[in-house]
Image 1 (tube, rainbow, N blue to C red):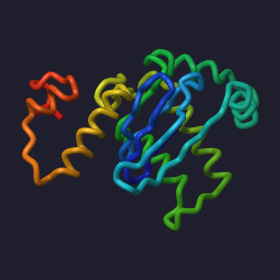
Image 2: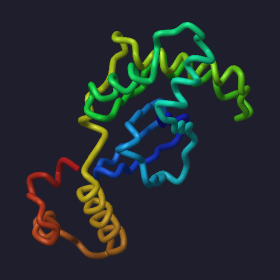
Image 3: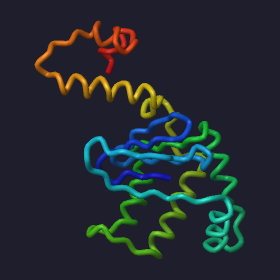
Image 4: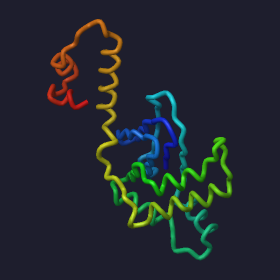
Length: 181
């Protein structure tokens, strides 16, 4: 699970998905789609990442809710329901919970954080939570790398005028798609 407090982060997952996480965004993914790399395009990022597995999460939930029927299975099913990833974009309820985890001086109170993490889990498994389908904020890694290469090339050669058609031909991209970037 990744939550962006401020800045921006690119989360690269093993199945060639790249998520752009901005302030207030949250992404949860299954471990088999493990994030293997991250980068910071704006040069600054502050966020929270939590990695767990079914066994540890079940033990955690049993410690908090002694006689609970809430299990990791419920969370995993909810994430699978949205195609292996769950994205909450600027969810005000989640933001309110996360703001209580981090103190103004960037410290955190462990016991309070544990309770707030429990709130996050309850929020995620709730049927009423508004989850974004994985559409607008993720891209194929090859496309992302191609765009970065074009940006680098254009930025390094600002004295040269480059036509969209030239870039289109060189990088095998439909020229009608370039103005959309």
